Image (cartoon, rainbow, N blue to C red; front, side, top):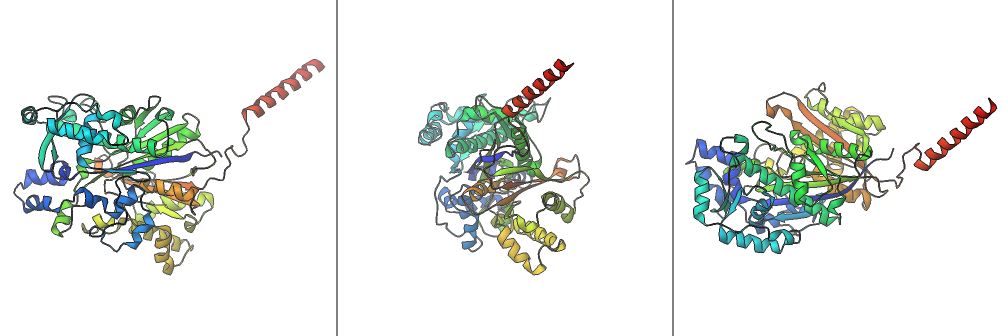
Length: 510
């Protein structure tokens, strides 16, 4: 079978400290319910500056300057350690500061809903003019307005844009009464779009890909855009593609909470393998609502508010080139309606069912990429080490299948698992952060087989109590690019010609 391949990956992080306080759900609810709380009084004292963010090892892993295994050389917790590498730009992407990102939000705005203060707008324009990916776009930053115009818009329920604790602009509402077009929702949607653009552009630039070669885009974040008549109608995918000059692309949005990226990866693979499109990009922007989700626990324990990063990614799936890792579309794991929600049922459906179809053992997968949440964030909040818990469950299932002993579980976790490094933004850590590293390991490295696992909580939408999940296996390319047992067009023509000759001879005999 001629499987599609992982052609490229791009990743981006955006440091957004002011958005924690003004746009993170935990903090905005606190403002409404307990505006004089000690938490709100102290939270800004726990914000990291941009340089500290660059020195944080998990962030460097996310953009490809460090390998996930490098994290093992740093004693936990990591927030008080400095990484050896502290670059803004990496092999896979970049870490963008908040002021430039606000400028990117204006570039992403098509309906003149973003206003920036005059001096700030000029400053951002100068910064983006130096950015390798936005030099041409920088001049599109509109001239700023005075603070009176921003104050007036804020009085009319615009959402503020802040830098270093000061208002530097706002996002206006797009409709007087439609809650789906309120300033709050438009703000969140512009954050998704702008961060998606950042990841998409990095994918193109880091992998020398022409935007016009993209045929289809699937956006798979957790936000939805629409109006009162179609609240989640979309389409983030085409909106992002437009701003990235992917003029030959069409696209659509896929939603599935945290599992959506792997659903999108499978969908992209199917479209390419079917021959409908040659190059499909899946892309997702970050969720401003999830900034500072565990901020109260972090402040309580005297550590930085570590959920200060918007995450974004883009992955390109293409036709088999004989080089890049293949996507085994025949070995997709899926959590069905009838699977159940017990840990054993979930792991069985996502891990061992696809392995059994190929005759593989649990230990035949070199690396499992599961929910790669950063334990530096989750452990202080009482959620434990999420990746480690997943690896232990997989190992335990291996023991039950008699593929390893109970005593081998710690070794299994070390060898086949990884420490988490991704922001806790739902869809962002769900399997896909490792795709870039996996591509490297399956081409120039020592890996032969990797499983990407996405899991989701559908009950959050209050439409079902069902759990969700999907997995897919990536393998080293054997170099064979033709379908096993299939025939070429020339062979088809030859067979038809031969059949026609046989038919003609038969008719002549008659």
